[in-house]
Length: 342
Image 1 (tube, rainbow, N blue to C red):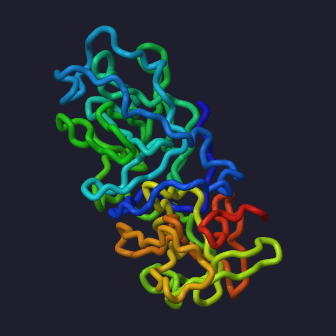
Image 2 (image 1 turned 180 degrees about the vertical axis):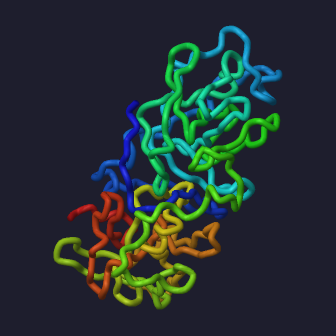
Image 3 (image 1 turned 135 degrees about the horizontal axis):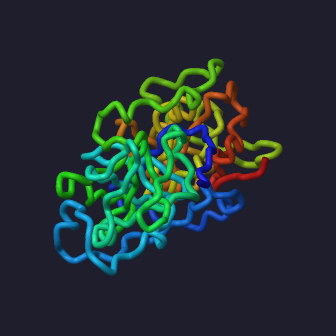
């Protein structure tokens, strides 16, 4: 099986949607100069999966029926991520942000899928192969099971993984609790549940290095209420906070919907920039200069709807030690774009 074992500095990823509608996609050409995270990072439209007629499989996933889409047509998951849901808590998603589910009538020891036929129309199988563990997720929980038709299905903690045909867009969790047997997956293969142990802090390897300075209270960077522009010999003009510390963007984040995928130990290493006073800022292009309300209670400044951070590995003003870290962290230009030069 082609499971990738890549790791990243960020901890469990999380999607945060801004309530305001000011943010919209822009042409971030600088971001295109680096390789996206995950081999299958391109979005896929699973919202248009064939919807089955009303019946038992729509409520409890009972197998059976002829003419069902074969598992060989199933799509792989690509770069997995963890997305936040107010009711469910962190849930496992595929590279396009669609929620992955498990079926109580399956078994994990040994792995076995009991969803075929019409059930499979409503709950499309996640194909094995081309999958990378989410940030902070133990890659060892990923596996595969051979289905009755000979195709291979992704498993998480031994549980076969599915999507739900009635999830129309990334972030939907319409399959949660369907029939009392379908549940969103947590990072360890257990049922997603807010506050459950499965959503505990990610593995120790994602923790900040011992020499890193601790983040400010609440995890937000102390920006002295303003941002400004500094000039580096290699990076050129880039944004710094009120203490002159370099400001960064995390490439897996998205602009629309506004998304932060840095949480837990990731935020301890890359503190979020607290809201700043626009009037005090100098040289920043203030288009879509908005504040992101994070599920952890923090408020995070964004520049052109891109969440921004500082780096605990930068010890003094002018340091740019976070530049290019993991191929995902980059300094920010005055207009909010990534600066990808090394």
